[in-house]
Length: 578
Ligand code: PMP
Image (cartoon, rainbow, N blue to C red; front, top):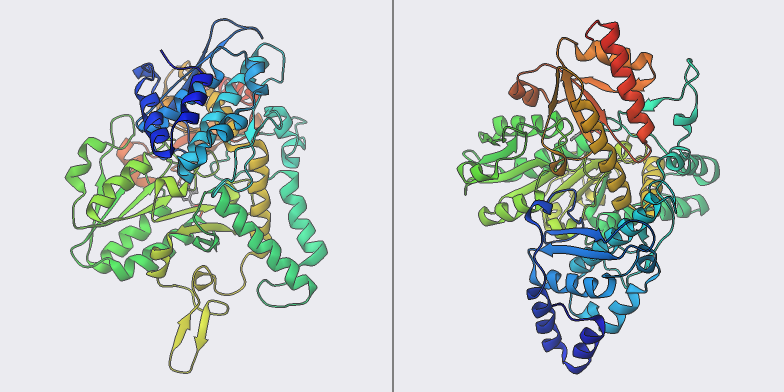
């Protein structure tokens, strides 16, 4: 029997700090059991260092239904926090949950002194999830918008000073879509485009386009050069974007965020700036067959150059990493593990935190390709503890030509620049030059200034909606996409079940070439990608040369999925496959 909130308050008031921590652990011990089959990716709360799963149950439908929060974690302290959330929220209706001053509870218990900043992020993630589910319950009952979301507004994600759970707006796919001009311009046929290729590049909301225009029209100048008014303003905006990105990723410091032209360049910078210096003949580089060429070819080339061996973590039949076989390929010779956080073909979400943990045991450096994961699920750099992580702006509702390379300070320190020139130097003499500290060391020449500033705006736009809400929205659409596709005769869908994947589905329909399918879908205004998606080793592994890929983003709606299905139907009839 869990204690009530009043009982918890009373106990806390009577105990000193150490005993309070002990009491928190005891609360965790008393947590009711959590269904094993609910430990899925869909129910996992992102942003937590430990694993946390959370679901809600109601004793009926409608506004009067009472909620029960059920959650579990592999951390005892987090289990204690769950017990507090249960005491606070259980038996309340959705509306009561939304109105409840949970921040007041945390303050009264002075929880901050018991938990680390990372755990605070996890706690925030749990509250966000509960509010989202409560809001969704109301919406499903027709008392709110169709798909609702809530954001726990924390301006500084790095070390949030306090928790501010406030419902700010609804995530209504249609409402989000209206913010993207390109999606609202009719095609020649008169219909609006159905854009299902965000895995290649996402579209930009008006605020991002406006920001680029604002810079160009109002104060453009080079960055870190002039101290006149434009120069100062551009520096402020450029560094402001860096700070926004650092907070978005919960990076320990802004100087760990290096602007690059994109994921591909970032990965090459790591392979040849860090790898060339640290990988020795006989060493091993561990990667996977599901990598994008950008995270495969640089390591393959580095291995050749350094006399190292490229090894692969085996995959399960459904396209996940087979961690059961990790010991076979990970050993003291492993210098680098280069891994994607989410496959751009299978959609598989890889357990990066677990890989990092295992890498630490052999002292390997972990390089994460976050191109597909960063736009769609929370990335908490302090929690996952990876050495490097890279991503591109254009998949994150931002411009092309800009991306980010994150490195732990000590890793950036031991990494050489591979591009030399202005701004990155400390001193240049005829015989020798020395470098500035990171990030300047890796930002030679004129940066994509306008694009970087607009990327900062894209991150603020995402935060104004809530990445957790976007993730939930995409997972809901993904579920229905997979369900509907499964009903198509002759279809093969690649990749794991829903709980192990993000919003990407690649498939083939027997007898229809992916290129023909994409062309016929295009005739119906449905934009998908076909080909090998820059994953030739993976396609080889699967024994196919090409697939059709549907990839989702915040602006997609259920109507997009309906139109996709109608277009597939059209293609099958046209190609006489019905
Ligand atoms: N990695 C992954 C997983 C990707 O999906 C992509 C883009 N398709 C890249 C790397 C390369 O990104 P960019 O082309 O922006 O350098």
